[in-house]
Length: 320
Image (cartoon, rainbow, N blue to C red; front, top):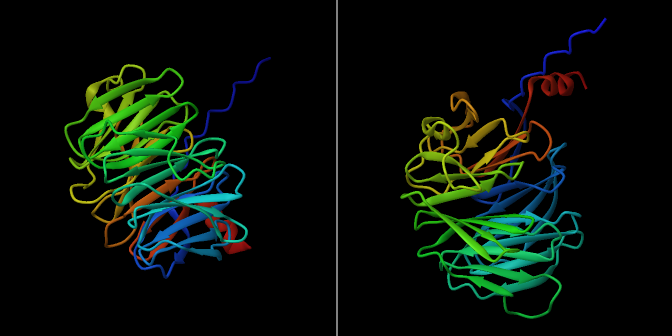
């Protein structure tokens, strides 16, 4: 006799506040998980980058070396290095353990908005208000980038790296995907300044946020909105003035976005319906980041970072 399989559990959404980090960095410009989700990185307007324990919410290290506010950061796969970028036009490679500057990369003509490592942390990719994306070899002592991508007609606001592909979003309203293995460029026109781009976890889709208060999910191979056109635009949040983050949940079930009304919005990816409107505070939710494997979320508002989880964890913490 065959027993019926248990129904799959619906994905849990992080709606319970687990920790609040008072960063003392001025305004927090960006917040990121490291590669395995055990640590949190916060970028401050006070020119510092800070490393926190995600589980305990305590400060582990402060990195000082930028001449102006830090705008983005990324951690290497083995947690030994960090990279960060700043309004001082530089990209810095850090040694995590010693908090020392390993290399300071100069070449951008304006503030650097976004930065990412490739999978092996052998290359840093940075995007700037100067309309270029620059690729830097982390192992070489050469001061020049190994490649400059200058197709954007306005500032580059967001970059994402996945294996042999590079995804960029620009204020010129275009999402560009570079296939570095094939030497090809694919461009999709959104007709509104792009604030953030990312790949889905399965690598088949791209998500973009723009200043028309709309997120768009595109099929990577065709550049078309997936399925029913109305379902692949996610709206309801407010984003008309600020560079705000968007992302997908760890299992690609939900689309998330910051908002200028103090909330984080969760939409069901397939249905396009609003699944959760998470109240974060009274200001603009500037940045967010979803945990790579668990239903945990980071949000940044003004001078603090909040770590969100699911209800069962709150009960565990209370009993512990």
